[in-house]
Image (cartoon, rainbow, N blue to C red; front, side, top):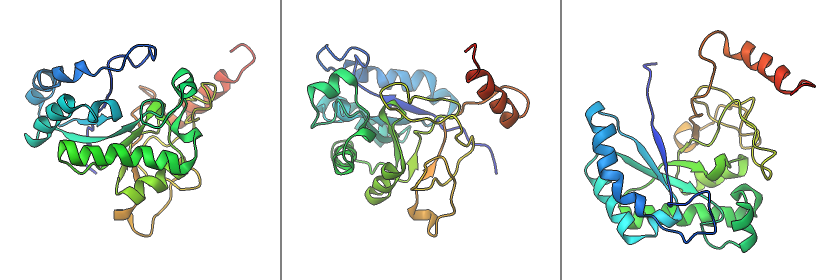
Length: 227
């Protein structure tokens, strides 16, 4: 298979780390210049994964719609539980993972952003990334039900389980695969690949040597008594 470079960009509100500030999306106005400077000269077509505050803002949606219409990028879906309504004050304080809420509520949040992308930006989104890398087997089922076909949430060699119940992706595959509905880290052979979600793991690995041997060594060092 010929190598491919896929660039995905989480496209979010201005103050991701400070949930006490009012939600603004002024940074989106700079996307055309960002696109023209870093991607157009190289012929790279990034995927802007937009979340609810961005796509629900008329001016931000208009900027992304114009970029998408020009053919220089694609638009996908990104979901943070604490910015996609409905959410509670506790969700905002704790930045609760969308995988920690009832499945139907998670589905509603993903569906709302996908619908707004179609309505306001004018494209049918195909790609998804969970906020804070949140995704599991039920998320995959929802993506397939909604017609989303690419997930980019899996982040090998990382473990977020100590950060409010986040995912443990330490043993995730490095290469694209069709993930199982029972365990997002386990590849499967779907009966209908065109209707299944393809996982594109984030490119994280070791710069030399055998990835699996180095991962095993990394695990021993990580779990050792001195670390």
